[in-house]
Image (cartoon, rainbow, N blue to C red; front, side, top):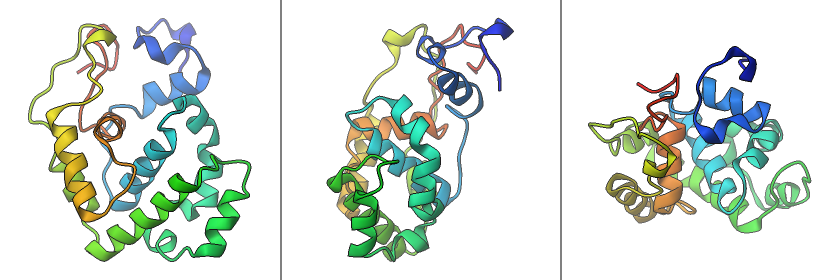
Length: 185
């Protein structure tokens, strides 16, 4: 794991906890492909809605265990007993609407016959420049709004434009590392 002692310049949000440093340095803004991997990121972004990302990072191993590694085929088969089990699991965020959304979203992908990777990446912007500072990092873009609308039209839940943009950042569809960050492209 990298850390502050390495003297690297990082985005301001990434320096307050070791989990943030590792996430910033190793994952955020790095291209992610594969339906299951993208389904996991989409699900975690939905759970993050209204919470601090550090909460999700710290609970991510438990989320992975509770949601069968976010394997779409497995989660799509979860039933009411699984939903109750998840609601009783104090290691994860126990929000009934978010849990139900993840289960429903897995079924939507299953019904689509896959193709989540292709669908999500079709909204990645063609261009992107490193923001000068965090004030230039948007919460919503035309692309994230279009992604949100397309996902909702297919039946996905907890995929508003802000969540869609966070997903784009988390999966490398955009790289919002500030210009002075060592990870900026």
